Length: 319
Image (tube, rainbow, N blue to C red; front, top):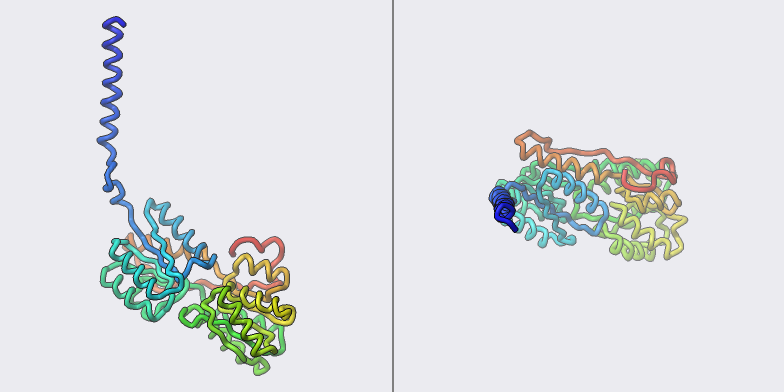
């Protein structure tokens, strides 16, 4: 290689090396590169429910589209664990927490801790006892959901024996059952003969319904606080060969229950929109970050889904 070519090669290599070091110096490869990213936390009562999975997906999409991070935790219906998880998020310096409380009253100490740490909290799907500790609550109109189920029952039955499947630690469940009971009380031909707690879980609702069938064989109407509980009731009724003679109501609008309504295995459900709940909650978080005023309570209407408005074209997905 002659001297001219050698010098050209050396110069080219030097230019490449200089360019690399310039780019390296312009990029922060340390942990500090993430300092501008907000950390948000979400703690649901359980993720063993497709409704909360959809809410989490919607919140995560909005958060990550802002270049931020969402930490989602699952206390599996354990309020003490949920309180500890919220404290962990506070210690981890998250800037906002989404909370779906396991117990709407017992969660208050954790909410107070976030409030004192000046971390805004958004309650989703169910209210808390003292909304002083939350910046916003995003829920469906749960009382309306119960009323809608009762209205459908009054229009399609002249009377009967009712069993209630409840979750009394969740305000959303309390409101749904109350709406149903208040409306159905207008007709004395309906009688509530059995009630059982089921935590809104299919695997708890099924044995609870089996016990009701054994003790109250004349029950011909079931009002379940949500669709997983309704599916548990349906499984028990099917095993007892009673499904064809019992009307079953739920709340949510889970795609599986829409298919059950279409195939006449379930009567109706008051449909919610977890996509809207998640998206509105996440958008509200960024309004808070921007210093905008937000509504204290955002309540979305439910939509009764029955064989009157469900067909093969709309049983897929959430409304």
